[in-house]
Image (cartoon, rainbow, N blue to C red; front, side):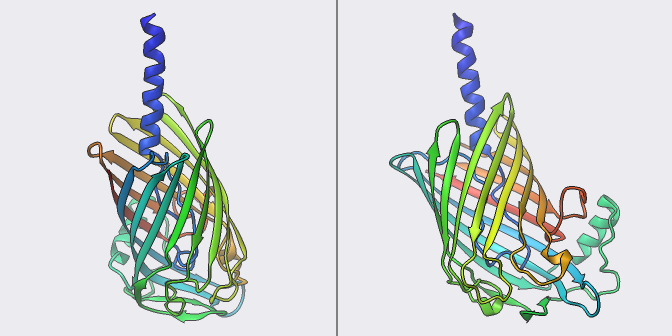
Length: 314
């Protein structure tokens, strides 16, 4: 009889642990993607009246020089630092409200030297940066011209999540045009999004899946797609208060530039670590790579993205 009681308890603990740690809350940080709404993967929603504040910081360094034929048509050589402030609250009826406010700084950055070492010593993939000066800040395509350094508050977004049976969720999101589109900090339009998320646990392993779509409203950026698909898979290994995450994310390009290598599917691979510091605080650290790391699976994204997030629940 004791075994029949103990087994369900162990399974419930495994499910709770996998949900609490969950996937990494991140997205593709390419400079032309960030102005648009994307729904980041997230684990179990909060209980009624439970609240959570979180602060996330990411640094994404990117370099690309592209053209189909002829002169250079797309050039990106910059570093974007993004500070995200997030508030979540559990509501009645198994719902959750989430509001996000980003602050963005784009400049030449400090990671160029580290990325050269990373590509040479660790992943053994050439960067193409050897003949280009370090510390440049440029985002250029033929339709939208050139953008340089920028600093400001980005587009405010919010979403509502509903719990479904069997550890599934649906979510609706909206983004308001509060950021400056001239600085490539906001899109200049109102975006809408919807997604489905589900998770399955076996022992210490949890698989999280996400599928959704974003309607990119009338944007100040020329060539913006109207509809962008969004999907992710995250495999989480949880061991008591720690979790290790391998996460694949994909989406369509935000803009149609006419350059095949820029308009191709955006797919990145994130390797993350999550630590439950106590009952209220959780820390997550992650590194995201583009096609340089696993070219058969990943495609377009920043050369390297580093991130950290601290969440406080009360």
